[in-house]
Length: 79
Length: 166
Image (cartoon, each protein chain N blue to C red):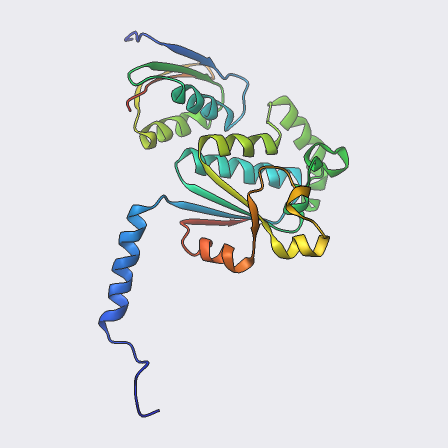
């Protein structure tokens, strides 16, 4: 597994849809171009929502790691 | 009736369509929601959908009418007497409310506020309902942007990519 230097880690476990996505959007807004944000989510919808949003917003999904019912998304701010 | 002045030339409709599609490319996609219901389950569904639209860079227009408008009277969202669930699902109410609490589902009004932070979400109150119930804009939560009539809503909805009645 490739390791990414993560600038900001968000733990949205226990938060229901659309909570984790909203936390990611907020973190991305507060980040600078090139910075990397990691998001932890237990919400099943996130698996679809996060990649869709990242594509729509023009950022880069570096990795998706699954561990049991927790998914960790690593996203780079691209613009 | 012998002057066919009002008959359109064949090329007119296609010109209109071309103009329409080029205009569509310039603007954001739109989602229009008619929020008629005032029960917590449907308010939550509408708020989540508005959040999704805003997150996906759509312009979201919410038209509050009847019970949906009453739900946005100042403070109504936290009034225990207003925390009702749709009648047809009443028997599931305790289960749903418990699930909301357990799964940390945020109050719907908080979700709407967040949706307005991340994207463009306009909330309009139905003028007719306002008149009917003797309400003014000051009686409503501050997330209501203004008053709109049905024709104004239809004008926006006809340009929308998604229209929902909740």
